[in-house]
Length: 121
Length: 107
Image 1 (cartoon, rainbow over the protein chains, first blue to last red):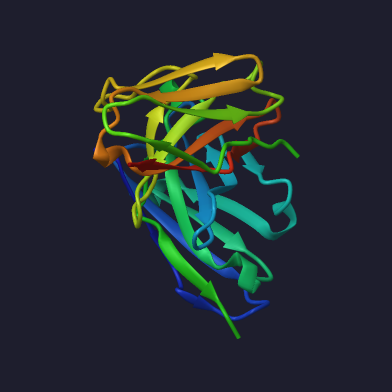
Image 2 (image 1 turned 30 degrees about the vertical axis):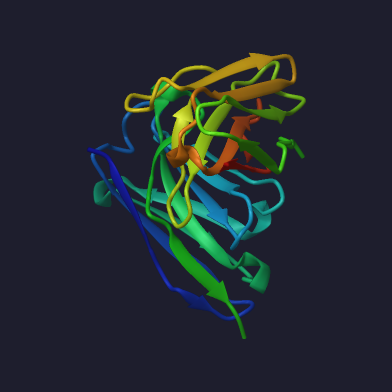
């Protein structure tokens, strides 16, 4: 059974750097074609894809946020870490990590519960 | 950047059919995917690769693709299907994108 869980700070001040950790079980990020993505959702708004990291350490970022995002993986710990620099109130929202299922092509079949991050001075 | 456009809302009576469209220029070359999200919950994948259904998803959920549009169809809508629905795709550079979202209301 695949599970993912996000963890990190719930309250940030503007200009700070956010670091979120996705801890997962039930799969290995060293298995071919497997990936983990990050998606966020401002309150009452649509989902927004941020980044994905693959088993071979290939990474892709949202073009609009690329300069502020970094994603890394620690296969031995079954963790993926997302950093977002220069946080702003518009970055407030729920941040999800999700499993990219190779057999389902470019989709996310299992999601974490999400973690709410509020940016306020 | 690549965009996917959905109608903001769809209303349907119980037992009827709901159709949600998603339009994007890259869809003729890329697969479409659909997620259901209920209030306070994480999204759930209901359709992958345009028309495939993950295990555990009811048969009343189906998907199709034609040109620049993918469509999610919910046949015999039930009250529990009231939710927000998002399409998603990816482009050839490996960038993912979600649609604008559609709120389905069961009357």
